[in-house]
Image (cartoon, helix red, strand yellow):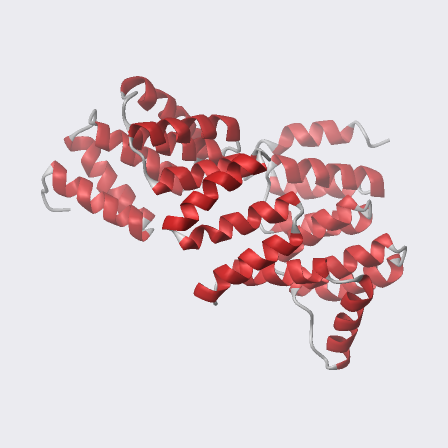
Length: 318
């Protein structure tokens, strides 16, 4: 990299982060750290890079050091909130976003405050914040729709999702949400009729509709039909579709199905603690602990934290 002033390095690093080019951002950061290792901008941009790279634990350690050194920096407070959010420490994230908003009011700080409050299930507070954000940034309707869905208000969630899609018609996540909400809002007979009509035409239902339909079959005691449908569709499910269906089958205590679906999700590299706890409970309930141990042993060389889980699981094997 040619010699550049510190200001130019900061500008280039911000551009790379904004464009999502994390490899270039890392290279520029290394140069900036040589030129200005103790500068506020260097630390703050390193923190942003760690968060965008989803290196949550490293980001958490750096954020604590930076807040101590630069307590009046809104940038540091905001990205400390983002670091806490990545680690699912939502109360900590809320405090950071409130402080960054006081230091330097900005719609982005309010957006993330609304997201943190949503995760904390403080829905009335979150809605008040997000409604203000939507006035300045209509795309934040996506967050408002998610809030209404978590709250269980399917009709309002669908209305907001459709308003968002009017401006963002190709947003895959919002299209999935609309399908899921429409299916959830249907009477059981309507949903079954739609699925069966598509089957007669040789077309597959979307993954969100499929998940709602299978959950309904299981709740009605039609387990054989549900299992046949899962077996048919499982090989073609996306990672997100498999995870959604895994949680639905787990919720209705179809643990054999949940085990198979969680296995597919972890095969794709997803290993968060909440998922693993449900995976292990499914294995115990469905008599698949030995199979789970074998799966963990295959993954353990790349994920050493699984060794402790393996030891605990072995205590359940006769």
